[in-house]
Length: 92
Image 1 (tube, rainbow, N blue to C red):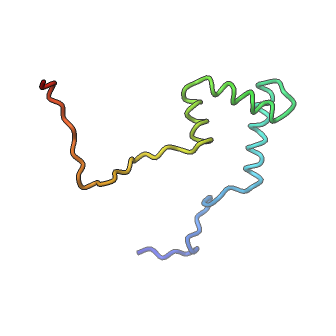
Image 2: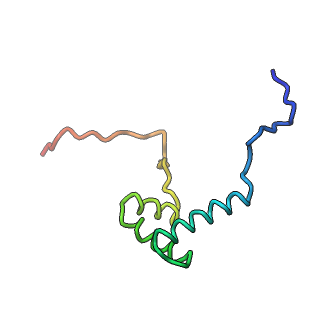
Image 3: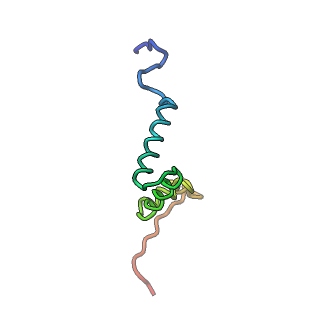
């Protein structure tokens, strides 16, 4: 087994610096302002959302962020008795 020399420290690991996040956020804000020819961040973000909501994928993205993502697994009340229902046609 390898002995850790730095207590789990790895170069480049961990959360990015707050300054880096702010720079990235400002770059996206500037790009949106230029794209929509606005002076205000809020106006450009609203214009972006209005364009995004025109597509089905955009609607899903917005819904997941506004209402939360739907669960991927549906819980059954009694998992021991899950019987598939098979139809063999109408027997009148």
